Length: 242
Ligand code: URA
Image 1 (cartoon, protein in one colour):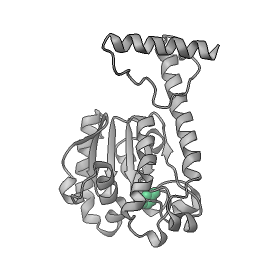
Image 2 (cartoon, rainbow, N blue to C red; image 1 turned 30 degrees about the vertical axis):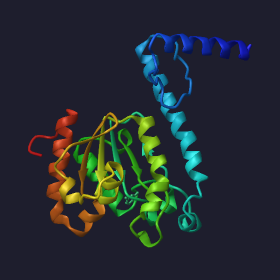
Image 3 (tube, protein in one colour; image 1 turned 180 degrees about the horizontal axis):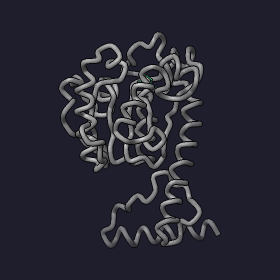
Image 4 (cartoon, helix red, strand yellow; image 1 turned 180 degrees about the vertical axis):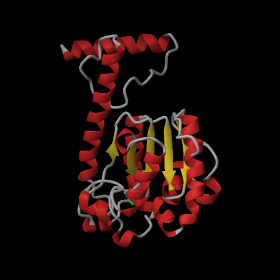
């Protein structure tokens, strides 16, 4: 039966190729089937897509937890920190790497910088649960040192696949490491701020990292300007006077 199907599939592909069709559109990023996939009903398609994303992220999370690509990080981490939030988020925040609190809890942005990020999200009239938060690195660098380029290289496949599964409309890079890793540039965060970029189907904006704001509160004004620009593009209304 399987052989028969694969012969038919081959014949179909060969006939499409003869007709000039050399590429097929990718329908689902995860390739996981879901209940209601075959129905035309938009609500069940939406629920199905959500199921797919959730399942895709679960499978990827298990792969991340088993990763031993970076010897030092594998030896020093308590656990990997995958990401958190809505798998169907329109907006993703991309940070640098877990710190001590994140390494201990397994959740991204839960320490002091995370609490500030939550305040920023809420000032945008959003909730943490409706965005998605992830980091470039999934392991804590010892002493919170800056991630090394080989570590970013090892983790690239993971954060890129998270983004492929979620397919956000908007990505906000928090700080230099996130901005440079996603956009594959050496430009400083100061130069990257205030401009729009694209990554796959997403519009990308870069702003200062919340940890930097804890050390340099005067930069909060710049971050708020960036958030207002982002909310404006997203069509999210802010409270009057903000
Ligand atoms: N800083 C980050 O970049 N990510 C976290 O999860 C916490 C602090």
